[in-house]
Length: 110
Image (cartoon, rainbow, N blue to C red; front, side, top):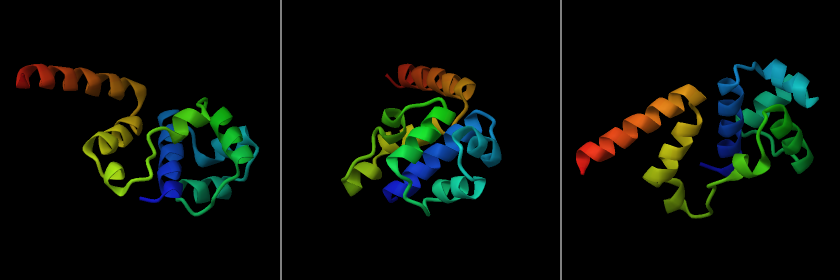
């Protein structure tokens, strides 16, 4: 998956976890809602300035939005990275439940 699609997927996941529509995010970030959709679909390469606006509106950081993005194809298809991406798409309460479930599963397996 190319970097624009990864970032777009993360923006969408964060927006949805906050219960915001594209219109609400656009208003908070001072952008047009159609531009938000283009970013989320990986169609637009947003500037750093735009990404800073989005991070502020999403109450996150550039570091968080861009973390764990590697250059290596094997890395992008690794189970830990795919798990991380899936985990980050979930609401915080669901993340906590998934973490607890994972901890129990690991204990049972050992």
